[in-house]
Image (cartoon, rainbow, N blue to C red; front, side, top):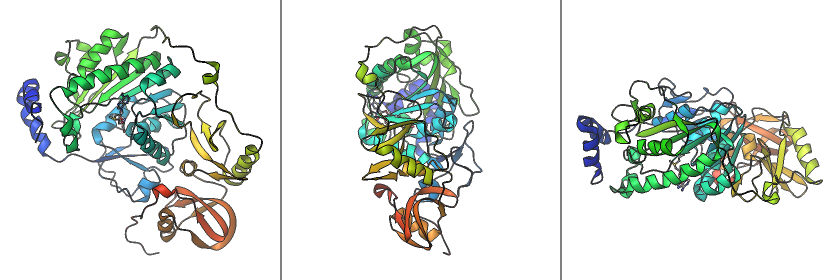
Length: 456
Ligand SMILES: C[S@@+](CC[C@H](N)C(=O)[O-])C[C@H]1O[C@@H](n2cnc3c(N)ncnc32)[C@H](O)[C@@H]1O
């Protein structure tokens, strides 16, 4: 059942089109996934790749199984097909400074990273602590090396990064009307006034986002709702308030133009994109891309204290040899120029940015942890590597044991850290002592693998 007031609203707005639109809520939605171009041989997955999602790179229709190596090793990300259009519209260039302001669980972050090819800076922010943790896990799985993950309010981030980013994505919290079919729970919050309340919050978030965009930079705004209050009317407001122009989005069959008549009749609004589930094989979405004028004034913010501008310290005298010894014995190259230590954890930053005073989940790629007189590498590091000085290709039985958290014995003896691979995919680190491979698969991620019918 659709919420009271919802049906009438869209009958009024859509006229005859309301019939197929409302009927689409009775039909099951479409599942999708994206491949990961940051991994070697990204197409080497056990999934059907015959149904690509139009205009998206790496996107396909179909469902992913969570307990398979393709998922564990970050070769695939499960994402609803319409949501893939957001990343495709944002399409950042390698080397840019990019902010994903409302990022969890990470669908768009992982897509943005796919375009960036590990070059530049990707700040992924999420305001809710629990969701920020899930975001970090997804960034880790995807093997992204140039991401910084923060758990901040847009206001506090804007204080730190005035006129800083080349591109900002605001995938805004919204009334979620476009998800009513996929997630029936989304319906229970809806009242006729809910879109207006959401619009207020969206304007607040965008006000802060604009402070962080450099002149000439682009902002991408998206929602998963049909409500004009949160879609065209927000863009109309932005165009009235700021020196922004709409960058028209190219449409393909099944994609609809934004509706100027649902806002202030500004014809530029037709350059935004709407996805309706009765016309496009995906859920409801709205996407707009705007460019800030090159001569827009730069943001004025409170000057930061010297202390908060300081970049976190690098390694101590004791830590330096531990890291170097590990890197030389294990890593194919030690190309991690901006190292920093945070609470005994070693990170590699994509660029040396000052994060002091912010709630930071990950200031860069986690490389590992300093323990008493030794260095223990991070699972996240393993998922970014294709090879290492010592590599072990696991049998199916060994892989099952590994992701379940068990040690296993080998017919060889050896010593030190091994990059473990299964089906040529890096799946984590193990430490060989004699014939025993000690398990370093993270405790919180352990699972019973689904490896299908196997012989070994
Ligand atoms: C649509 S979801 C983001 C989905 C994500 N971009 C993805 O693709 O996986 C919106 C996010 O905004 C966050 N959020 C809620 N209130 C916020 C606020 N006031 N400022 C910034 N983010 C907020 C929510 O916690 C939620 O994770």
